[in-house]
Length: 204
Image (cartoon, rainbow, N blue to C red):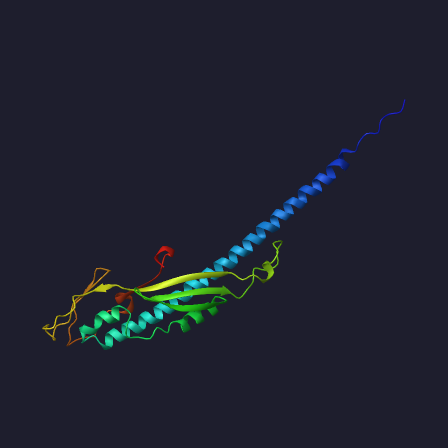
């Protein structure tokens, strides 16, 4: 009597093994592609945040300098605290910070109050080759907005106000600045007069 040939279990398992390994490799490459894209997006967001803040900080410093020049004329303080009186040319500083983060930016002045800057950063590096078609030339784009808000309040002088007395600045940090027109050696700095921060998406 002839025996039926026995199937080789190892031979049957081998194609299944190959299929499983191929699937795992595909998943590994897919996760790698997602990681590459995420890292690229994070780089773009870092560049956008840094550029927007740099532009706003540059203009904040100019506003403080303008306030110091007009400290004896408090009728001009309100306009300065509203962002008037200086050129909003901080986009040059934004370009520098973006370059340091390996990106380029489109920068625009934010209209209205509070004043600030809106930037769109594009990474110089692409996502790179991956199993996802089209990523080899794809660059990440992220946006950020930084605003300059007054950090101090004061009572504007009236028409008959004493010109020898300057308004007291009451700032958000709880400090009150009583200014002496005869001794202006101790004046608030840019960080005392203005708060610079990134705007939330729903604030833009």
